[in-house]
Amino acid sequence: MKPPEHSIKRLDYNQENASDGIVPQPAVLKSQGWNGVHLELHHQPTFATAEHDHTMHVLACGVFSCPGRQAPGTRSLDGKRQSERRGVGDIAVIPASAAHQCSWDAPAQFMVLAIEPTLLQQIGHDWVNPDHIDLLPRFMDERDDFLWGIFSTLRAEAERGGMGGYLLIDSLKTALVIHLLRHYCSTRPRLSNYSEGLSPSALTLVKDYIRAHLHQDLKLDEIAAIAQLSPYHFLRLFKQRVGITPYQYILRCRIDQAKYLLQRSELTIAEIAVKTGFCDQSHLTRYFKRITGMTPKQLLQLRSASL
Image (cartoon, rainbow, N blue to C red; front, side, top):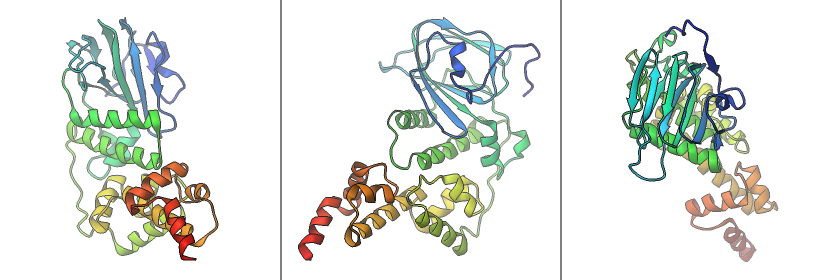
């Protein structure tokens, strides 16, 4: 897509407070440190933006506290102008460099998700020429339940966070890009054939890496790189081989290591939580009970009773 010929304001969501110059009020929620993607939640009064474009691909999603409520308005996108209904879960797609302008005829609640074009290239290289991946513009007139789910989960992660945050974000980024390539890309994806699956040697390397780095916030793209696969194919092939997702496998490894330390070390529960990659003692307790049926404290009590 060619950039606009005339000079307009350019937004780069890698920069601090990038959107402040085009909306009346700052975003009420922003993501921090999500490599390749950036999420914002806005509560805005009636307003209209100046013409601008973006260095990243941008998705906008309607969000309202009252089910069924809409905040109609008008959007100019890549040379076309159209009125929009902007209901809950309605999605607009604004490709990078596309000239863009919008007005809101009522107070609005919406989310914005900015995506680095290189992210589509990195994940999409298995199916399409990475130099020819163009998103198709879309006005905010139609709901996309899959993207609404992605937006909702990312919002919850930005608000609360939790154990395995980077791994969860990486998984959502992969799912997001695959969906965009399938439904909003001008080039039809072609699935690669990984008929041999994940080799035993690659699986061993991955498992060894995970066990050696349980105390860290493991990232899907880093683990996939060890197997020399894209994150998408690694997710699929790992589950095919192991029977569970990488996220579930890492959680089980952390619980197993915590159980071992509880039974064989003098570390406190809080110290074990940090050593096994949990955010704190409460996170360890929650997942430990879910998987083992008892709390770490109860396991320690059983250990003491047997001595």
